[in-house]
Length: 511
Image (cartoon, rainbow, N blue to C red; front, side, top):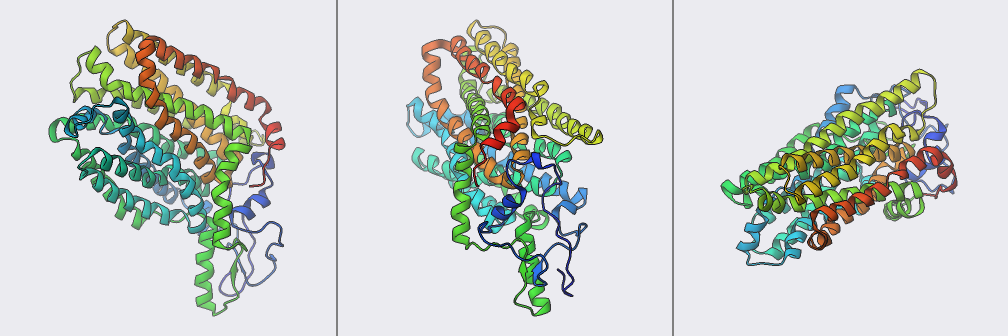
């Protein structure tokens, strides 16, 4: 409905897809996402007081935005997802200096000083995802980035290990915002055939940030001290505050229609106007529904559980490898504190190869099927041609890294192993994220939160026991053990590629 009272045809806020694309009834999903009580009658579509999109080409509908407008938003989100993960490991090359400055000798404390940031990434999504469904995406980005700057200042001014740990945890909580709801914003604006490329740009940050950070951090710490790592993060994230304020737009359809409703009430003087997507649930009830949704997805849907577990284990192994770089290349190969940051470069390069390779390939396959008139199936995202090579690359990379260090082979060879591992990791995470996003397009934020909880927990906790494992088994057999574990996970995407549609129809919890 518009200001003159004309009724308009309702256009969904999600891509037009075959019913098999989603894991539950589309109408039910849209009602829940909008906060409707699905046991009550929905608003009468013929009610003149119901505010809807102004036809199928309404420019306010995020799906109808111009490509420039869409990619500007995706670009800002992608920068955010690079900056906030920088805090996780950018100061890793200076851990030894920090321990000496604060008179701490425990290796567990040293490892946890890195990992505590990832705990924030684990628990932050459980709060961020439901809040974004109540207040919209944009306010969460704005306040999350502002708090991230404040907590980064606190970390820079820390005068003890405890204070530094506390502020790193808070940085992780605030920094989890773009990592959690970025996929939701992409699903809000991108049709399925363009989503892969956008997801690739966004998904690169959580993985690439921890790898490129120490490269700059190593030299920065050597030249100016570890505190300047946090001052640099403050500057980078501070620049995003005006950028996001002026250019980042709201993409969540229920919030956009609610704003439109408020505007029309003022223009028409009709207080009875209400949004087509307005919920009958109170904000408190809606929050209660939304806050348990990530855990229901994680615990009650085998596809989400196992794919999240696959990504979580490989992500935890990545962080375990990151914790070894600082001593492997300094003790075994004689790298200095500044040069040791360069040892993270192969992991970043491998991830970039994974993004370039799989971001375009999956979208190309979707477009090819659409051109043939074949209905899109989410299982296309986890085709064996993608997941099996990526899955096998993980153990191969681990075996190369572990045994070449064990036998003192030239440093370029273990770096090659890390590159192979990280490219496979990026492929697995990218395929899994897009697969789950295609199944639950309206629950993108909750699905990402479910994956982030498990992924970040293992990323934070696995390194705590990992160094003891290396001490007991050595780098060769220690990485071989991790390689065998990752090899055992390879069949998971294959099972879902074959039986995914059947499993989705059988395990379909009311979300």
